[in-house]
Length: 491
Image 1 (cartoon, rainbow, N blue to C red):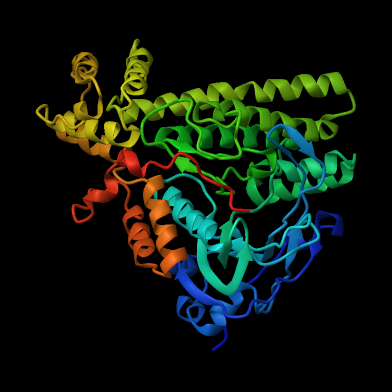
Image 2: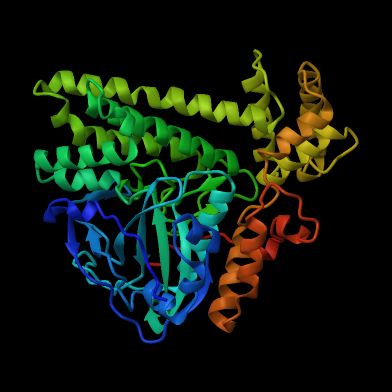
């Protein structure tokens, strides 16, 4: 049998100015590293066939499957605040779209599949390390319940790529609700192509916000929808200690998914100013800055949509500002609700926000591990004698002072201790993609062609809220000599 992709492509039916038609560059000796079999089934694909030599060739871009309409998408973007009028898919090619088993249209894209007209002198290839990082982190985010692009497969190409050193080349097959970004709108806005902006907005509404098709003011409603999704997404990032690393407008998805896992990382010790990305020298995209930057990105989207709001510019600006004004309230509501769940509060009382903020302040001052503090707090909610949360603090007395007030507060809640612990454990993971673990997996693969650590890490991260007593070390923060201080983009 032949591998069959049930493509039903819509983006490539848009005008030619939206993309460049380009096929993947064939590679010499593709070898499948990992296939996400459950995702393949969800997409209506046959995982057994994808694991054949023919499947590996398709997933590496050596063979283009029937029905594909390969394109590189055009977009612009603000990169660290500086506008670049043309970026586009420089090392990624969208093969096409499929309708999954839930009726959702999903992009299937090859990342690292060779140069495109948008490559800007780049080779269009990806090294093995960044491919494994994106596979690990994107699938971990999915398991954590956070909207995200997915990883269908990782394939080693059999060809080297040259970065600072010679590295194994690889291709990631990425699945997304779409790859439309704020920067996609900016690409047409800077060219003053209002017709293309309207065409793109109509496409986005049909694909991602179909309930707005008959709205009285659909473009206003579209901006409001994107604002709401982004506000809720960023709140979810903060609640698990995730730092994206490059929140440029070309990395901001219109669908509300997390996209483009470059120098991303999860915090170990809680630090609102934490930065890992080697290219974020000024801390623009630090952990606590992410809500502000998301709003900044959304403001750039609003600027693109203004011509669709009406001919009176001042009125259009005022209307856009009103819509953008909802971001802070939506973010705060989602973030505070999530924090209350993390500390076992299921009703709202005056003083709750201050109580939680006092915990975060004490965590920052005491270099308490973000993930373990909240997880072990759940243990303490079920068993007053449990003291592992206390052990996360350099000065345990700081936790004791706060815990006394917390116990007084949770005593006012209707849940039993067992119910509270279960509810807290359902939102506070044990396992996250610890940076030192991810780096160790990458080094084993790159240096020794050993993928057993990768397989095991992916397996553990698929169940982040389960204790998994057979893998206790994966919950541990790094030892001092294991700490990863910087993460890299990999382009």
